[in-house]
Image (cartoon, rainbow, N blue to C red):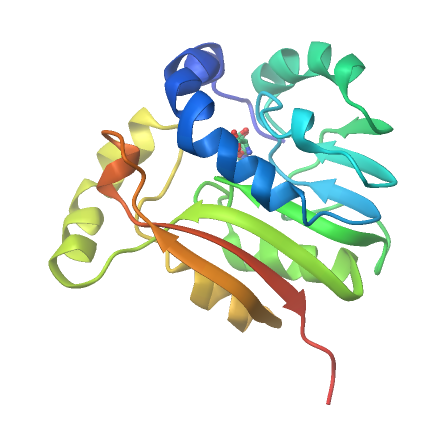
Length: 208
Ligand SMILES: C[S@@+](CC[C@H](N)C(=O)[O-])C[C@H]1O[C@@H](n2cnc3c(N)ncnc32)[C@H](O)[C@@H]1O
């Protein structure tokens, strides 16, 4: 169980306010309009995705950081669909195989300590035909990637264990998903704008 990041959690909504009112809020809305059925959100943070859930059966939000959960909990009452909170980390999801129609990850696969294990767990709990919806920042190319490698220790220290240089789309494919939709973008703001982002939908690859 994570001990948590008290300062990161305390500052998270304040630091991200402008981004949420602008590009990120719009992207969350568009991404989550694709959520269906029984939904699991990993690393729910302070609950920024919660207002965007509408036509789904229910949502389980998992968040292993107690300081993030403290910020998230009061927002649960305002969610328009049935919602429950879990303390689970993505690498050990306490749910049966094939139990969700949709898994949501926004800015989480950059931070989970073991991305391969987290993706294997996401695939396990998704039913055949289920979908992973994601917005993540990812590894750049060439000199941008080398720069990301150099700043990784400082970046991780400042941003609660975040890795700026993960090739997350390749990892999603390797974990047994088919990428159905993918958009690359650079956010129009400092810091986030330093690293390429992706928004996409990945479906569990069915056995041949
Ligand atoms: C940058 S924040 C993103 C929060 C939220 N998803 C959002 O879109 O605003 C990264 C989140 O990942 C969570 N996290 C860290 N390790 C995790 C793990 N092993 N499993 C699931 N979530 C984790 C952190 O506690 C934090 O809430």
